[in-house]
Image 1 (cartoon, rainbow, N blue to C red):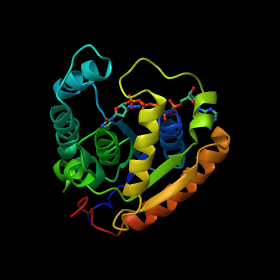
Image 2: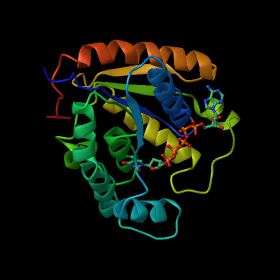
Image 3: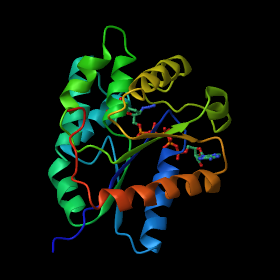
Length: 212
Ligand code: Z5A
């Protein structure tokens, strides 16, 4: 009998919501209970495309806005064969940002509509669960100042948050909003519970296609 597939779990949220912290803790917790799990993050700055994106985010280069949007999407598509292979092998993937960040960040720029921004990512592996780490701008500020990367300004992050709220109205995606203002352990407990339930359901469900 073929082995049961892993689940595709995505963490989204605004800057400093704790996505990376929680992805790492979740992978460790899953491995400890004998569930194979790996972490991924987007952008994946290790690939050739990822290096172009990284230079852009670090303001070492400038790229036209449509172009960089398509590069973010291409950076996801180039990882799809390996993602599918791992999921088929029964490995649960815990992903730090995905196509929702792509649509939210670009559509927060002037002159972009959310529908256009979603198009390049239509058909990507569909997450079984997307957890949005909700954190107010005031609470985010308490976690430290913005860094020097592009997009790390308060006004832009507020627009991004509004775009995420628009994306979360889509019932075709399994969204869960997580209160990210709680302690790291409490947020983790919440995320782990949702994830374990999702892994059990995903085992018997085919992997879907995003926004199709
Ligand atoms: N982007 C895009 O435009 N298009 C796309 O398609 C994609 C991305 C995929 C990539 O940044 C940038 O690219 C991002 C979106 C854009 N731009 N912005 N802004 P990145 O992925 O390299 O970095 P990041 O996602 O911006 O990281 P982050 O948001 O700054 O951090 P985080 O992962 O959410 O949080 P963290 O690193 O886990 O924690 C931040 C701090 O808070 C740290 O000191 C923790 O110890 C602390 N923390 C975490 N949890 C807690 C709790 N619960 N209480 C107290 N303190 C906490």
